[in-house]
Every structure is written in structure tokens, then in C-alpha cells.
Amino acid sequence: MGELCLMRHGRVEMFHIKRFLGRTDAPLDERGRQQARWWGERLGPDQFETVWCSELSRSRETAALVACGGAVTPVPELSEIDLGEWDGLPMAELKQRDLAAFEARGKDLAGFRPPGGESFADLARRVVPALENILALAADSERDHLVVGHLGVNRVFLAHVLAMEVGSIMRIEQGYACMNRIRPGKREPRLVSMNITPELLGLAAES
Image (tube, rainbow, N blue to C red; front, side, top):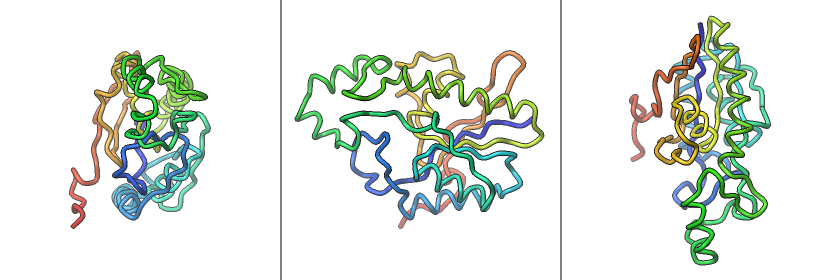
């Protein structure tokens, strides 16, 4: 039996600015590429039977580097949450522009939708079935299956695995290029490990 290896993409450009990063196609920075290559060097192309990613470049590039030239399949349902008119905005700017809306989202993470965007409940409704399908493939495999997701994508699926409410997903930490391992079960999947970053396993910190 294989496992579902659910990663977050590597670090992105302008990572230090706290902003609403959903469908904005922010590219990896050099550290993000280094993180992805680190996993690729240790896992190699033979570790995974299939490699999946979202359609956003930060996910696609991370997946390609980890797969070491192997095939990578984009899945539209795995794209990050659509934040509508908020997408790409610095959080400080939104607080100044519409503090009431910012606070309303914090009070109802599961149900609140930014103008033209999705709620986290909407995100879970499209992400969970897609990842459950890949988890089912792992159950019938001898090798693992890799998915390179996003912060929101990973959080809603991990909450599903742990039977947590969607509104509690901010309790789940997901560092850049972290790895989560999920094992299929006869009745329910099991979370084997979570938020294992390259830095935790020995990738040297930036000087």
C-alpha cells in the first residue's frame, strides 16, 4: 500500500509581505526552488507512482523539481482558494480599507466569501473529493502518490482527515515545502506525519 504525500509548494517571492495569496500566480523564489530540489534529491523520481499539482506556477514548479523530470499532472480542483477582489492585497491594506469585512472573515472562516471569491467551505467542497480520489489510488499502489498543494488546500484536507471543523483550519501549520503523509485505511485515512519541512530534516538555514 502506498501513501498520499501532500506537500505545500516552496517559498514564493515577496513571502515576507503578509497578503491574501490565492489565485495570484506568485512564482517561487530561489529558496523555494532549493527546498523543492532538496526533496527531489532525497526522494527521487522512483518514489512516486504519480505526481499531481495545481495549475498555479508555484505548485507546478515545485512538483517538477521534486519529480526530477518525471511526469506531473495539473488538477484544476487543487488550485488555491479564490479570494476574489482581495487576491494579492496586503492584509494591512485591507484592514485600512474595510476593517469590518476583515473582522467578519475572522469570525466565520468557513462561510465568509470575499467579493467574487470562495469561502473555505467552498474550497473544501472541491478539494476533498479530488484528494480522496488520489488517496484511493494510493490504497491500490505499491508506491506513494505526491500532491503539491497550497496552504489553504492542504489545511482543508488535513482538517477533513482529522475530522476537524473547517473553521478551525488556522490551527494547522503548513510551512513552505512541508511534507504530510496520509495512509489509506479500511475505514478512515490516518495522518502519519505533518508539516515536515526540509529545514527540520537538515536543509541549512539561510545565512
